[in-house]
Image: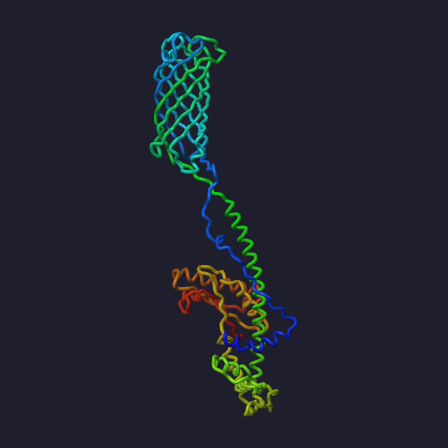
Amino acid sequence: MIKKILLILPLALPLKAQADDVSPLDSLIVHNVSLEMLEPIKPSYLENITSARIWKDNWFLSISGGASAFVGSPLGCADLFGRIEPTLSVSGGKWFTPAIGGRVSFQGFKLKNSMLHKQSYKSVHADFLWNVMSHSYNARDQPKWKIVPYVGLGIIHNEDNGNSPFAFSYGVTGQYSLSQRTHLTMELGGTTTFKDFDGRGASNRFGDNLMSLTVGLSFSIGKVGWKRVVDANPYIRQNEWLIEYVSSLNDCNSLLTRQHNEDVESIAELKKILEIEGLLDLYKNHSKNEGKKTPSMKFYPKNDYSGLNSLRSRLQSTQWPDNSLSGDSIQGKGSTESYKSGSSPGYQSSLQGYLSGLSKSCIGAPIFFFFELGTNQLTDASQLINLDEIARIAKQFNLNIKVCGAADSATGTADVNHNLAASRSEYIYSQLLHRGIDKNQISEANKGGIDTYTPKEANRHTSVMLFLK
């Protein structure tokens, strides 16, 4: 086919130059493609932003012990060190983000009041936690250090006098990571409540304070760590660029497709002219002698009408009852052929035998429609133009159509390939109905999985054949 095109070009170029209604492409559009924009993007992350995990992960439980000192109003006679007593603390909570968390803490044991009498107490308070080192999560999920100020509100109970006023809690916690789930903690905290907590002082004013210093361990429960948030801006920019690039390619492809269709039509017409004029064989001989020096042609070659004579010879052999051919003759190159009408007594039986043979065999070559692997989607939607022509010819000449689906036996089971072949033939069947073909003119067949053609992708097809009724 390529040789024929090359041989027709010497004749096509002068004719194309004379055609005013043909507008060839002035130039081919060349795109400067940025290979970087076509590469997968390596994720980048937003600074100081992580994905919040509200309930599932990052729970903790802390146990600590140390010393506490009660400083009340009235103060009493002893100094701070004379009021020190042991204390215990248990707390549990959760980190909602690397910076924000909450906990519920229980604390208690002994204290010395303003009279230096020992009293037992218990305190329960809920605290708001703020990790001032949260920016460290940008570098790693589990930083070594945390510094966590906190404030809260709760109830403190004096077991000796029965007072249970509400109290404010506050302080700061330092945490050092021993492992992924175990942390060493040190906490300096305070609790402030009303003056009469220890039994002495006004009941409507704040003044009694309990200060504590504890050391302990904190254990993480459940999944720990944080998921960083991916920056979407690079993906947005790449998608916008790709949309513009695809749009420009579509425009270019449409332009090239239109030019290609015009070229195909021109080449087909030129081939017909060369065949009728008897010049096609001459240019074929040029291709066989390609590369050899041939003498230049100084005159237009004589037309021997070999193409037309061959056509009439084939028609004559079928004994068609067409008197228009009677007595005609064509002068060829050094030969003369005469044709007579096919009005012999047996032409009717010959004609019926010829038509009967056509009704059992495909008219022309089957037309194939190729599909994507495992689907009933065409590899190229432009194949549907063949269905337009098939429908037009079938309606014009009242022809029958046979649709046969097939699949590639190299992939899939026999049942899968049988169903896939049926799906592909059904798709072409529906497209023919859509183009106005009566369903009684169409028959379907199923080859299932086959390995007839090479490459194996060619076996994923549906063939369409035309028959006389």
